[in-house]
Length: 322
Image 1 (cartoon, rainbow, N blue to C red):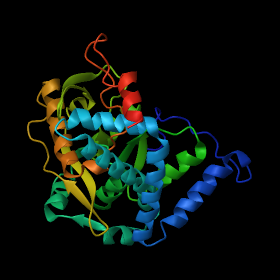
Image 2 (spheres, rainbow, N blue to C red):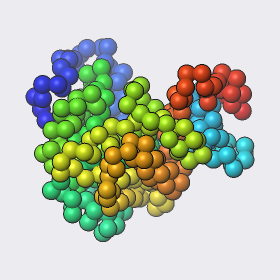
Image 3 (cartoon, rainbow, N blue to C red):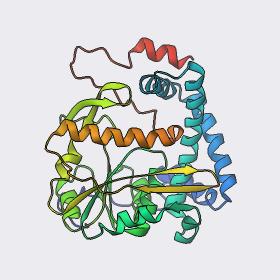
């Protein structure tokens, strides 16, 4: 994928003595050292980081509360608050899970993987096709991509970072078991990768600034904005769409779930395709709701500009102080 004409130009990498980048370099050194620890200690550090996040990220905490109220209307206030606390612990662990995905050896990662024969078969039986891997924003998304790449290396879809140190570090980390990275705006690069038979991970479960979306149900929300790009990409010849995700399970393991390829997808109906995707995401989230990215304003856009926001200032103020 290197050299594709639509790839963004990379800024020159700064010299090691450039003090502007010293803090971020030091942070990556500390992260490398932290993930050398035994996993229980890594989890402890993550839990502590999550507690700090829960304390200081008041607005994001309010968004998480609001999202859970919308998606799980049957939950009590105390149940939601407990789940939000658990979710922030998972966010703290996700910081170190990113380091695990980027810096762990294949051998160490494999010791902490749980993958069924069916999931492996669903990958390998479709290895001759371009795989549109439909996934969602679980907090261990970095580990998910790394595990999948151990069986069938692919191309990561991402947003390039303006900081050259972060950009190089994330590109190196994400290509440990995968082929390359391609900008989410590089449509030609994405299509090229799929046509060449590489897996492409696509998480369409965020409210992106795009007009290519429909408003369809998600959990208890009747009008969730859902992008239609997966349906468009799935129309490329010799491309199969495969739902997949990964969750942290007891015993310090990560379960990679790869479902069978979707039959008769896309259907030709963008709304029907989006609903199918949202049902998959809901099913995955219900398996481990504490590990999903609830702090994103998933429902910030409404079908009509006159519709009241799900995140109006009054609601955010109330939940921020809950």
